[in-house]
Image 1 (cartoon, each protein chain N blue to C red):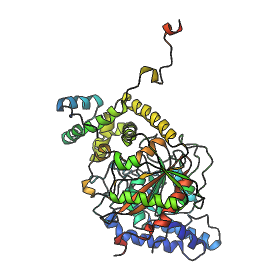
Image 2 (image 1 turned 90 degrees about the horizontal axis):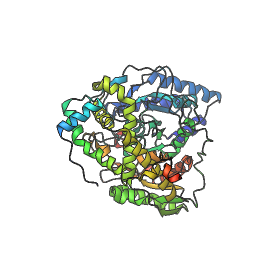
Image 3 (image 1 turned 30 degrees about the horizontal axis):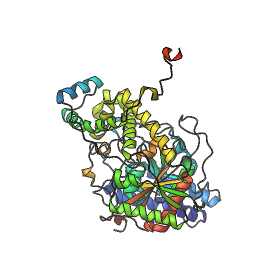
Image 4 (image 1 turned 180 degrees about the vertical axis):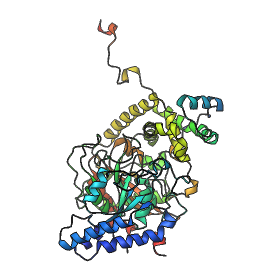
Length: 460
Length: 68
């Protein structure tokens, strides 16, 4: 049985679980499943065991640093790690070995985690799935012919398969919540400004958000609390008191706004996704929460403002390399960056104008509402070979609206579809209500029973 | 869904590529040309409805005639 972080932390604190044995169990799962899943692009087994031995010494001495001490984790390979290659899953940076840890990597290291390695990503968090990079794309543990979503693809696969108990992701348009949804785990894009981006390879500076992914919302809360906090080196980092991450907070009398037009008409989702949303709303009602319907600007407006903003900002980041060494990128990323290159200054400014307009309209439409609910993705994971390089522009996604807004948004497993693969619900809060969002996700997971089911490959 | 514009002609698109300084393999450039109408749908949406000049945040001056 694979423990959650919360369960492992309790057992470690009670001296009933050895951090070294926990790390060894994760490494055994890496050895068994990495050949099929390609979740890691750089394994640091010795570092993991060293970290675990240090945690075990603290366990024996009664000096544990907290609930993450001795917990096996991995970092998406856009997070810089001192002395360990950080490549962005790209030939462009294949030999890059940073001297310093990213701010958030350092925060988790100080909390005592055992680092198993660096996890696959879509190239520079934008181009994938790609089959022409130095490492193959991660595969979905529920069916290795299926897409993990991206860009935090390795973290999704590694957590779902129990190779690690948690890991970092980044979310510019849905790169935490998409893989969390298709891999059947939990992942939160925190409030913009809650977590530092120092030392994380950038994609789009007004949208990029760092955050955690794990098996449960409760685990995400533990991970997020450890990585959140003001970083003066990151201009986007907010100097603001941290929110409460108390999952036991009273949810009664909270008002939930369901954005039906997003998932029922703007972009119709699968029956299983609809069922999961309705079951989640029923859980909220049973907890004494009021469910109302809210109408936001059309999903297509968020899509237009979000996609143009993202592509233009990404082009600004990658323009020098695209001009000098375009063929060192994979084809998928070249294509998407190429779209960014076609945008004009006027296009970008129109996107910012639309963004201001839809933020104002959303704030007005959600007055008196504490949480929002909609889909995270359309349905079950497609075949990995069926994902086109322009798929993200052709149809509006459900995640980018909350990057546009900067609001915290969580994807949790809400059931399984006809193909036996996970589906998800997205729960969203107002800025700095990350703890409330996680508490609502915890309520859903506690009632729906889907956390008891792991991918079949773990039972083989 | 909004209706797609027809793609730019290969000659028009080649000019755009030259203007932005993109040098892609021919097959990739052709794929980008054919996908470009999806981008134009988004750009049309950003400009609809168009704002009157007075709604432009940069419009902060008053015409001399208005002061008279």
